[in-house]
Amino acid sequence: MWRDALVVGAKDLRVEMHSRVTTTQVAPYAILVLLLFGFAFDQNHAILSQAAPGLFWIAVLLCSMLAVQRSFAVEAADGARDGLRLSGLDPAGIFLGKAAAVALQLLILEVVLGLGIAVLFGTSFHDPALLLLSAAAATVGLASAGTLYGMVAAGLRVRETLLPLLVLPVVAPVLLGATQAWMAALGLTTADGWRWMTLLVSFAAIYVTFGVLSFSVLVEEA
Amino acid sequence: MVTLRRMLAYRGTGDRTTRILGLVTLALVAVTAWLGLVVSPPDKVQGQLVRLIYVHPAAATACYVGFGLCALASLAYLWPRTRSRSWDRLAAASAEIGVVFCVLTLVTGSIWGRPAWGVWWTWDARLTLTALLLAVFLGYLALRRTGGDPDSRAKRCAVVAVVCALLVPVDHEATTWWQTLHQGNTILRPNPLIHGWQLLTMLISFVTYGFLFAWLLVHRYRVEVLEDRFEDEGYDVAIAERRAEGGVVTAGPSPVLSESLSVSTQKAGQT
Image 1 (cartoon, each protein chain N blue to C red):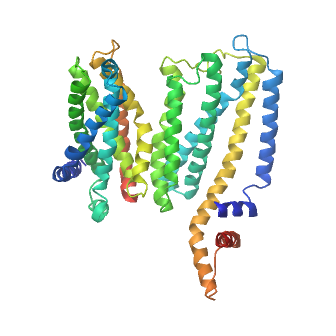
Image 2 (cartoon, each protein chain N blue to C red):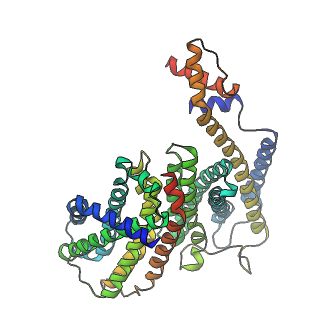
Image 3 (cartoon, each protein chain N blue to C red):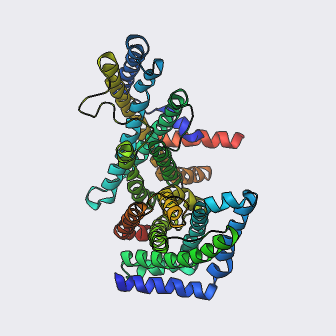
């Protein structure tokens, strides 16, 4: 399973390095979203600084939709999905590989967005350990839930519109937990941010487990 | 949809058992309304507002039952030994009814919240999770409408239903796990918060909603059966009709479906 995950993850990342969609399209889109938030709040620095964690994670959620759609769009051309199904790779490995590739792309986007909120919203970072660990847990949760639902929607004619409808309500707990953890990590609240790690880690564990268990059914039907 | 309506008009989804079930449900609704509006007294604290307790908790319970049943039927479909289209139909029917009761829960809760809390909506854990529950099952229903191969669709939907239903126990326990504005359990505790006619009326309201749920479920399940038959046989009927136009007589599907499809085809031709 792990070897297959490595093969699929490396394949997705190689495709991404050749096409450079994440760097040339998704990353600029993420920065554009931050700029639009600035316009929406009338460049009010106090509000933007206070709302920075929430705006950051909304931008990540929107980018995750693009990353997941891209991850399954590369399988749509030239019967690649059939090739994947007939390759004999462990479906659990395919899930883990695709989720890991999406997670890695999201982490890169989060670095870009983190720099964006620091520069555009004047955010300062207080607790790096909480910041990094909560971001890692939230990213694993987003990538695994997104990959699971990406496979559900793969091959459907309405996948572009259906995927956000399926995924966004499901990942709302990640938005809540990650925003609250980052509020504490950025020094915007005195509340204990570490307790939200329980929610983020539980969410990630549930979706990784469920993805590993159910991907064989979905790969078969995609 | 025109075709489906014709089919329902021709045979319907009711029979003697469902009519009796419907009449019992109607009688129970009347009894609950009489007990809730006339017999049970107003509350010392909430006054007349307490009468919503005969509508709102039972609707929420019916919503949980609908989503829970959907998840169980989906698990039965995913398990190879019990795989059957019947489980998929049951999952579809119960999810749709669950969504109806979830909307009813949110609407009655909001009506209750306005005079009790002063707002139509508040970002309370129980309210937010219930709204999320509605959103994820609306996504599930959207997935069911994507068409394609029925078995493939059933498997996708079954996986999603099981994931979505994970929210049900979290929503139910929200008032225990978090500090919420929404009140905790009223009956399921060592000392129930209500007594006498109020308790009796509330318990009867659960029975009433149970019967209403069962009645809706039977009819909705039978609509699923008709829709499946339409999907399975509709293509054959269309081919048989084209052949008949050319003067070739072939064995077609059942007379009921054939007649209903002919009616719809004629109507489409007229328009």
